[in-house]
Image 1 (tube, rainbow, N blue to C red):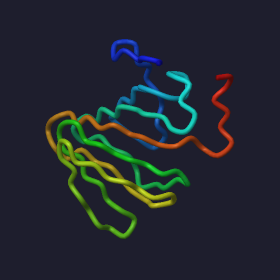
Image 2: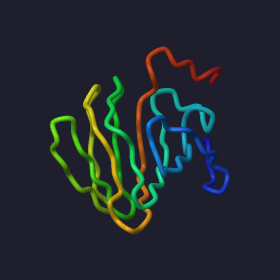
Image 3: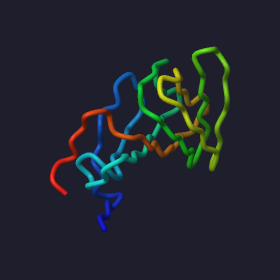
Image 4: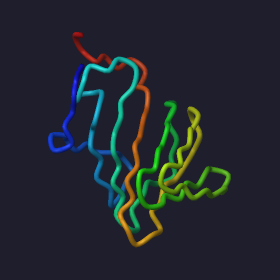
Length: 120
C-alpha cells in the first residue's frame, strides 16, 4: 500500500488552467499506480481551464463548491458537491468556477500512451 498524506501532496502544473492549484494524490511521482492517476484541483473563484480535449478518459468528482463544465458544443452543466462526470477521449470541455468560494474537485485520468511509470 502507498499512502499520500494530504500535507505531503506535491503541486503539479496543469496546462491551460488558471487560478487553480493541483495536488497529485496518486500516480506519477506520488505512487506506483500503473493505470491511472488522481489529483485534487482547487479552483479559486473565477478559476478554470480553457476549452481543450485530450485522448485520455477523465472523471471529475466535485467535493465542494460548484464547477461549470462547458462542452465543445456549448452545452453547460453545473456540478455541485458529490456530483461527478465522465469525459470520453477527445471530448472537448472548459471548466469554470463561477461562484465566490473555492471549489475542490478530484480528477482521475489514465496515463498518456507510452507513459512508463518506472520500476514496480
